[in-house]
Image 1 (cartoon, rainbow, N blue to C red):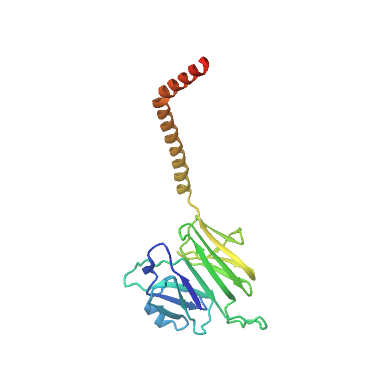
Image 2: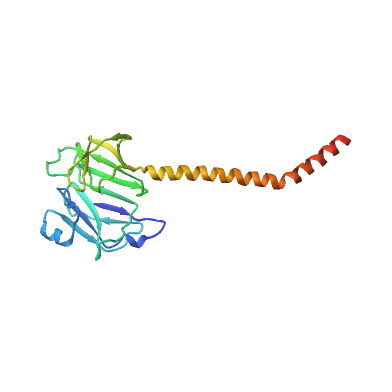
Length: 224
């Protein structure tokens, strides 16, 4: 079962008309309806309704290791938003999962989807995590709070792969950009300079008034 949570701030209609895809093998970088027809090993279900606040998608007993949420788009680009996704799989603590069964018992994702994304994973045995987006030197990967260096595969996508142990794990992807960091640093300096100049100008404007009031109060105190 997949439970996918919608955004609550805006744009709820964007979580509609999308595919839930499940496969034992990594997905191609581009999955089209033609790809699905030619690859019977990819389980799929199309979801039309808007999830508000969430949608529950039964998996009909399907098994797989890789799951993808993909918008149905007549054009090349379509925006798809969601806040969190949970994936639940069958589990029998008295039996060892067969080799074809997914080791993932539960996975929950969260983050701001701009420069940080995290997935809480509960897995019955060690698994390999594959980051399917394009390579970017600003991406950093963490397992249970400790940075890990992935192995990058060949090809233009340079797939990033790393291992996580059995048990409950937290996998994080963070994006760091030097130019963006420098921008915010200079912006903070600029804001501090502006505040200093503005404060000095206000002091020069109100200084005579403050001095006059201070002198009058001093004279009254002296007379008393």
